[in-house]
Image (tube, rainbow, N blue to C red; front, side, top):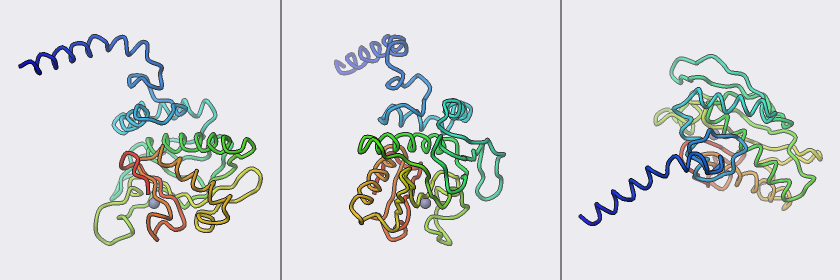
Length: 232
Ligand SMILES: [Zn+2]
């Protein structure tokens, strides 16, 4: 009985403080304000990103604001029907000054996560060395209508819903090339940067799988939306 009373009091306090929270909490910690791609990583951001999965209009709005701010260039594509349908997919052309080996198709939440990933990766590199900067991201695609590991049976891959992106390498502005397949363990300076760039994937996507996970990922980072920070 006493526990119930305490619980009721706590619930009432929580309810009364809601308006205060909505008004006074900084946007990036406030679960009630719209997500911005510049929000810092953390559980509030992760929660907002998850919520976009069921709010396509709100998601597109996040992307439009990101485009206006110069962080990403994309176009909205028509829905895809068939065995691997896509609702409101986006085609990503570039991330600000960072170009892509080719444009790629993404679910809107994956487009948001990818934009955040590139922004934060730039920041992380600059924290290591102010002159370091990404010029281009090499990848082998996102959307593919198939099961996981190309098996004949089993569950559909995240790629079947354009919710995963396979990144194979990075070109830096100083001309240096980081190749996941060649440089994951050597030379040391390139391996260090690649580990940082993979680690940043863990902060932004639901899961980040790299060469240490298994042989199927020896040559690329798999960044997917399933999970909440699964990182191998
Ligand atoms: Zn993949």
